[in-house]
Length: 193
Image 1: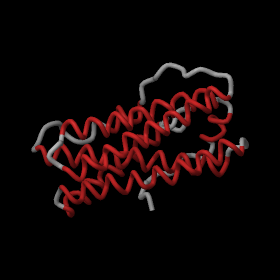
Image 2 (image 1 turned 45 degrees about the vertical axis):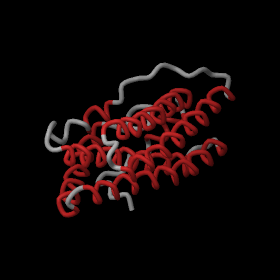
Image 3 (image 1 turned 180 degrees about the vertical axis):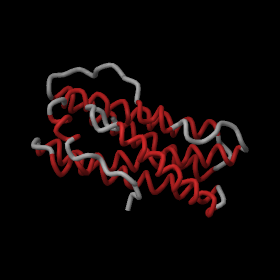
Image 4 (image 1 turned 90 degrees about the horizontal axis):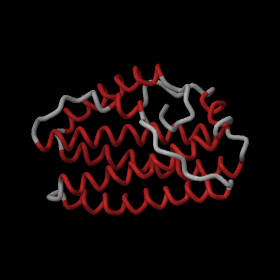
């Protein structure tokens, strides 16, 4: 369903299990960044009313996810750690050239967001199926379903606002590029690393 070209190495879950505090902190900041992305799309493209409406809902949902993760951190007697750079996203955002028409910029941002959500969904599925901590596994199962909805929403908007054939070609090229990035990752206790 997700179309990812390279699945996450299942051993990544072993790294996560040994570093739950780190993954929860990273996950909390991923939710905050997802909300920020939605806000940025509203600010940058206010003329797209349907997109603005959906992004408004998404901001609220992502911040509720942030709160859920933060609550898990507090339940375990930890505090939210500091945000760290996300090498996955940094590398991913190098794919499309800067500039172009406003529509092209919008489509590129939507495709990036769709892919980040797709990879998060895939990672959350792995966590939901393999974590020994059953409460955490159930939590990630619930969020996996949410991420799948976000992935399809962003891809749907990209196809709506861009030329569908061109968008599909760009999407496949981005998926191939992302697979190259993933070959270097799956070695860190981060959602995307």
